[in-house]
Image 1 (tube, rainbow, N blue to C red):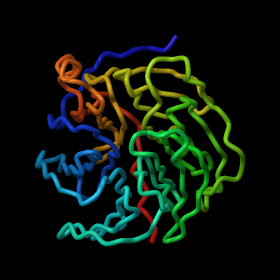
Image 2: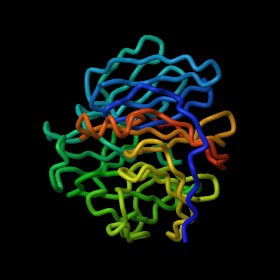
Image 3: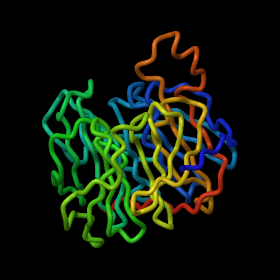
Image 4: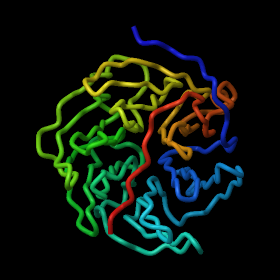
Length: 294
């Protein structure tokens, strides 16, 4: 029986993003970042001061990775771009695919410094997307025929990768070369969630190897062991929780984004926190995201 825990956290940002996604944290500047994909916004929150800045984007951004103190990598519907922190200037870096109807979705940097990034149809068209491995400017397609790529995260030593196609709702594991982040085995189902409420969405893997997964449509973050046992369910005050990120100087706090995408006026009225960004309010043994290696 999975233990369910009531929400004891707080609202970090009360902006109701249509599709809050892709949170990450830079420990050097104590700053959290996340996207409203549909709204074409990059949110920036300096945690110590709670100073909030919202940056307009010229595309549908979904993932940000720190390169160094001056640069960030952003994945979008138009490919990969380098963003200069000082002035927000955006420059093309690499193309992912030639499918104008697609956009980027979930992604994360492997301990090797390579990026895994998923793509999908703008209207979640069946099998329109894929998952790619990006090492420097080299882009390699790993998996095709993906409908909604999510839950991309990695074991602390980089030897295991996790991902899902939310359309299937199978949390999947695959063995990896820790030095490169490339698969060294075939994907296998870690946990079949196809008959349980909600969709397997964004995920992070903590320092102990536990997988913290946001459950879209089920107002929760659920925790799995590396062998696929679900050991905890932490409620959040928005039904469409979308992705977690470790934050704070010790990576011992958890930020969770959410969305109101697809809700009509009545549904939004019943779910007033939909699209807001939360701190879960529980102590976690997290770890900082690797930097993207150019």
